[in-house]
Image (tube, rainbow, N blue to C red; front, side, top):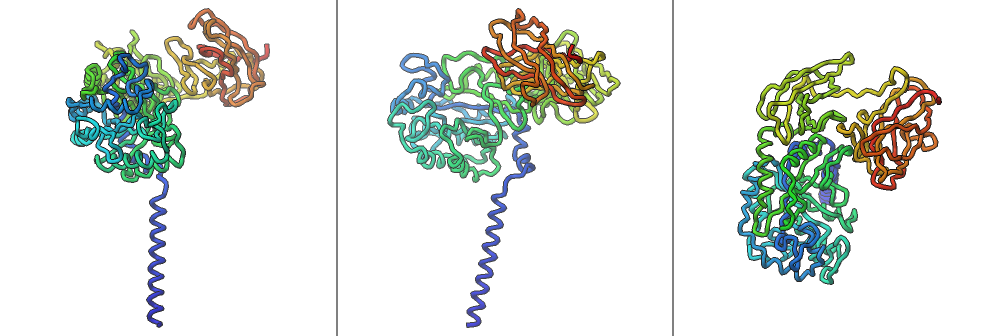
Length: 585
C-alpha cells in the first residue's frame, strides 16, 4: 500500500506539472502581439509600396452587359445591379474557358512594373471560387470547361519570381450560396438561408483551403463586412492561425493590419498603415464598355503621392474571360516599370514627407539621409525646399544621375532652403531629385510669432489640417473644404493677453455661399469665438477681407483654429488668411 500511494502521489505530481506547463504555454501562445513583433511582420509590406490587384471571375463573361444592354455598374457587380437570378448567373460558367491565361506572364508583368506583391480574387461577391474547392462546386475547376486551378498556377509563378502572394476573399457578400449577404438585399429565393451556416460551411473551409494548398500567403484581403459581428469575425479569424505571419486588411469588420481607402488618396489622416486601392479605368472586373483609362503620368503621380503620405498603392487590372489583361493596362504598367527602374529608390522603403506643404506640384519621400523630391511640373525658376534643419551634401537627378544645379542657403535660425533648377529634359510624369543630407531629414516648424505691429497672421500655407482639407499653392488658399468635420489650425505664440479683432480673407462664389464658421482657441465653445457667414466674393479665386468680431487670447503658446459649423451647399470657402489685430478698436 505505501508503494501504491507513492506511485499515485508521483502520478499526481507529474500530472499537475504537466497541466501547469500546458497552461503557461497556452498563455504564451495567446499573448497579444507586441509592437516590435508587428513591425517585423509588416516590414516587407511597408517597404513594398506598390502592388497589383487582380479582379477576375465569371463576371468577365457578360463583361458589363446583360440582355444586350450595358448595365450601369462596375463589371464585377453585374449580378447584383441587374438582379440576375442565381440559376441564370450559374449558367455563365459554361462560357468561362480562359485558355489564354498565363500565370507566369501576369506575374512577370507585375514584377517588371516594379510591383512587389499581388492580391488576386479567390472569391468575389458573386460567390464563384477561382480555385478548386471542396466546399462548393461553384468553382472554376468543377463548373467550367477550363478544368484547371488558376490560383495554383499563380502561386507557383509568384514563388518563382519572388513576388508576395495575397488572396482577396469576399467573406460576407455571396450572392450564390444560401445565407450569403447582399448589399441592398436579396432578390432570389435561392439566396435565402442561414448566414452563420454559410460562414461555417463555405467561408471557413474555403479560407482553410486557401491557407493550406497554395504555399505562403502574405495577405488575406477581406471585403464588405455586411452583417458582420465580432463573434463572426472570430470564427473567420480562426483559420488564419495556419499562417501566423499573414497580413490582413480592415474589411473583415474594422479589425486588421491596414486601412483601405478606395479610389482615393487620404490627405491628412495618414497615420498608421494604409493602402489605396485604385482602378486603371473605372471598373475593377472587366467591362467591355469602360475605356476611361488613366494616363501613365497620372498613375505615377498617384504612386509618388501615396508613398509621400506613407501608404501603399494597390493598382488593379481586370482580365477578360479569355484570360487576357487588357492591352491599355499592359501598356501603362510597362511604362510605369520603365519609370520605376530609374526611380524606384524614391519609392521602395520610403517614409512620409517631413514637409507640411510644398511650393510646387509634386511630393517628397524620405529614406535614411536622402530626401526625394518628386516634381510633376517644374516652375521656370525651379523649386525650393524650405525649413530643413540639415546641411546639404549632394543633389542629383535620380533618372540619369546627373548633378543638379542647386544652391543651399541657411537663415540665422538655422533653417536651410535648397533651391534646385529644372533639368534640361524633365520627365513629363515625375522628375525625381535626390537630395543627400548630413542626417535624416528634419524640418523645423516653430509656433507662429506676432508681426512687428503685434498682429498675428494665420496664413493657409502655415496651417495644419484635418481630413481632406489642404493647402493649394497655386491659389494660395485652402482647397477641398467640403464639410464640417474639416478644420485648419495653427500653433501660435501670443505675445500679450487681450482682445483681438479678427479679419478673414477668402474667396467663394454665390452658388455655394451661406456656410457658418468660427475662429478661436481650439476646443473652446462657440460663445468665446468670432463667428461669420460666408458671402460671395465674386469668384472662386478673387479673395476679399471681412471683419468678423473679436476674441480674447491669453499670452503664450496656444492652438487657434477655424471651424465650419453649417455647410448648406457644396463647400465652405477658399481661405487665404486670418489676421488677429490687438485691441478692440
